[in-house]
Length: 381
Ligand SMILES: Cc1cc2nc3c(=O)[nH]c(=O)nc-3n(C[C@H](O)[C@H](O)[C@H](O)COP(=O)(O)OP(=O)(O)OC[C@H]3O[C@@H](n4cnc5c(N)ncnc54)[C@H](O)[C@@H]3O)c2cc1C
Image 1 (tube, rainbow, N blue to C red):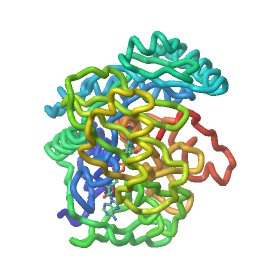
Image 2 (image 1 turned 90 degrees about the horizontal axis):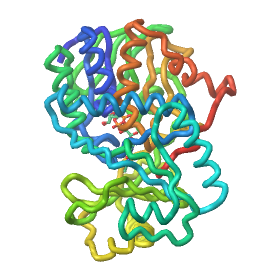
Image 3 (image 1 turned 120 degrees about the vertical axis):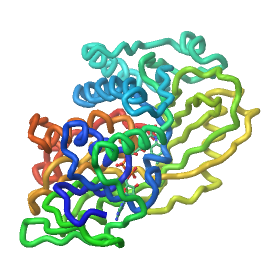
Image 4 (image 1 turned 180 degrees about the vertical axis):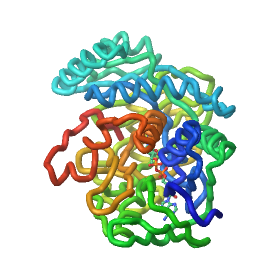
């Protein structure tokens, strides 16, 4: 392992690796990535692979349009097949308030160039054969949303970054960060220390622990999110289906399995990744209620990962007031995977002073002290 670097990225999840990948492509390679486990150990190796442009703020819609463009190119760019399939996202609204919300977000999405449209329950059951539309008021469908297989996205970005000179150390845990006054001096790991003045905190659900090493308090909280996969069948389900009344979502992978999860409003913040029978019960009944023919399929596996949640549902990005060179890229909740390509590229441009993207000051940690928070309403799961 190198003993000094211009920049150290803590966290070899999709966010840290996307940043490393883009920095390397921009010619900045004196970078070390530190990952305590293997590359898909965190939420990035445990998620549903959903990629959507249906959001409620213009910022998030444009960010996701860019991410979709980048995901489409990533397999070719990295040589790793992401199995990105644009089968769309179909959202079901069951009450008038959610239906009205969908209508206004669709107008905004259309103004940004996302071809989302309102579809009646009858039209929705033509998009998803066998869909039970009892109690469904209206649906939103965007055919250009999609799903992918998360693992190769990480492997591909890591491979390109390390081929270009970035050092990626797996099974290397950061145990401390030393600073003199406002200046970072070194990052200490269980395999040795790296002298550096710049650290990126891309540690997902562990970001609070990393920030504490420098006396910085982040408001993020980790929540377990469970997910399951059903045995494979012939491909029949094009879009990701999501029920906005209970946060249910599921899609079919390229191998034919049905993969999905559901919100648990009773989940308490914890670092627990155990599987629960309660999830299996709630998820099975929610899925079968929406698509009754799934009742004949067996559950192959359930697992869990963390949603790294912030108080306003937006990530924490950019600088902190207390320490120089300590950059935050965390708090991505249930949607960090889809945002990673665009966020990684923008962060690389911002760090290298090639562009001054406003999101790095708008979504900084100090926004909570300034009282300048804005809630994204289109948050699922
Ligand atoms: C079940 C589930 C389903 C989801 N579905 C979707 C979806 O469909 N679409 C979507 O966009 N998002 C989804 N998400 C959210 C998405 O997975 C996350 O937002 C995203 O992966 C976060 O990436 P990250 O790099 O910030 O965090 P992580 O992937 O968790 O990476 C952080 C890394 O930091 C490492 N680390 C922590 N502490 C240390 C330390 N001390 N030293 C060294 N390394 C350390 C961890 O080991 C970890 O690998 C889902 C999440 C879950 C759990």
